[in-house]
Length: 291
Image (tube, rainbow, N blue to C red):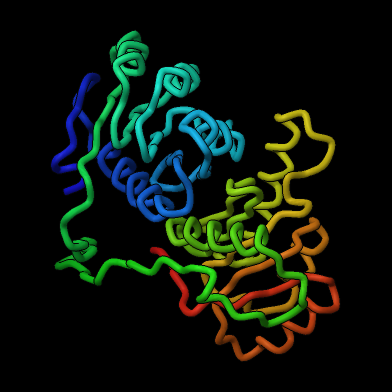
């Protein structure tokens, strides 16, 4: 299934990078499919710029785009559900390489038809077993099984703090589903079922947190908001925080909740710092660590 059986309605032939990015985009929305009526993801250079769930396709797209509208330029848009004309009109305002979804209304296809180079793909239902991941190296290749973990609220365990409500749990589950698709070290900030800042591919977790916060600052500025989107946000880390300094940085930004795998020899120090800073931490059963 997947891209191999996609129907291309229009646009130029898919390039190597288009295929790589589109595959990453579709994998992300598939992991969000059960969290809401519509899911959206925008991918650039195989990294998520934004992701969201919404009651309709336009709401999901708008929330995903708000996460990082600067990086989204020239990206790949993936949507679950049927894209209607209202959503298509909003997407058509953004320069994108590919738009892909479960389906499109005739009105949506007519709107995209005015952008002759835009590749528009209808994706098949996922039916095949996940394929192993293969990466070439000098003289051979690496093979590993696909990361199929999709956490739910029942997988989370309270490690520090006590301020846990349904909205926080929903955002933490959403954020941890997204961070699975962010290159490690990966950090995702989320609020109201949408990413608000993503930091990925960093060589230390402090820089990943800082990048996510700075992007949340910038996105709020572009949206005309007086305070950063990081304030009151929930954070997902793809692996455990090895030192308490990460907690200090995110607490300074106003992050209230964290979901992270456990297993560091300094877990107790990290949890103690979180309690001191008023941050609630929930533990996830396993890490992602995408490379």
